[in-house]
Image (tube, rainbow, N blue to C red):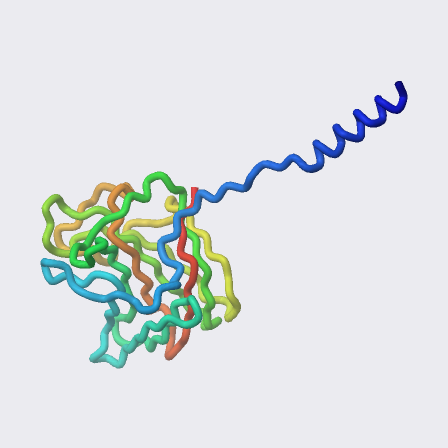
Amino acid sequence: MRFILVAFVSLFVLSACTTTTPPTNTDLTINDFSESSLFSGTDTNGLGIGFVTWGDFGAGAAIALDLDNGTLKINETTGGWGVGFTNAFTSSSQDVWQSQDWSAYTGIRFKLKGSNSGGSIRMDLFDNRSTGSQVDDAERFFYNINDSSSDWQDVEIPFRSFARRTDWQPSGAPDDGLGLTEVYGYAFDFAGIAGNQTFYLDDIKLYK
């Protein structure tokens, strides 16, 4: 009887120790930069889609985007009113500026290797556009990221921390809050960074 009891207890302990709950991953990957090249083009209305760079180039601003061992390398020089890039989401045919529904998620996270410049990087979200729009009138929401390290860092931003931009909105932009059901892209603006710096981005994901 004692042998049977000991065997039963041993079996119970072994079962309790080896039974685990399978891990779940509810993150949605937006960019992991594993592709061989970055797409940049225009939609049927002539609007830039894919990875689009912009800046006050006449005032000395410059920016270059490159894929570097599965990361996005950003070499930029700030000048004038600023410099940065946009990832305007596109269809599989790569000829339509297409939105994504992010409403089921709580925030966005990514890996950032900074330059420890002491400045700030602004991240913009492009929310919904006016019905039937053929221009860029997506409503802009922003969050400022401090560039306080030259190491890789995990950045996590709840959507509730984004605020509507009051310094500029495109003509005709809606003013109805960050709905997240029609997100047309994101941008990084380096106007708050002095001089020439290099940054790296990786694993841009949404989390619940």
